[in-house]
Amino acid sequence: MPDILLRDIDPACLRREIVADVLAAVREVMVEQSAPRTVDRQQMAELLGVSLPSLDREVAEGRIPSIKIGTRRVFEPRKVFDALSDNNCNSMETES
Image (tube, rainbow, N blue to C red; front, side, top):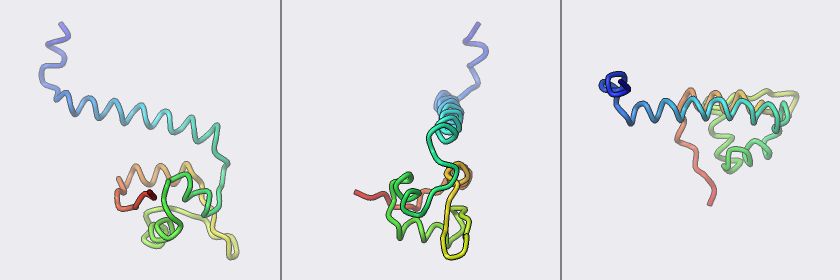
């Protein structure tokens, strides 16, 4: 019987959809439980594993949302992760 249900489904596509759903659920729980509501530039860069210049570039190009309070820029990690997954932003360079 399972053969009939899965015959017309691409296994790789199904696997990607399952992984995406699991990552979305895990990310939501982790962000809510472990990350502060807002973080500064240094903390956001560390969370993403990128340099400060890379983070600043992504902010300037509108790929990463941030809040400017006076001269200070803060980030809401959940919104940043959501924006990156929505935009599928692969242009950030990770630090070695």
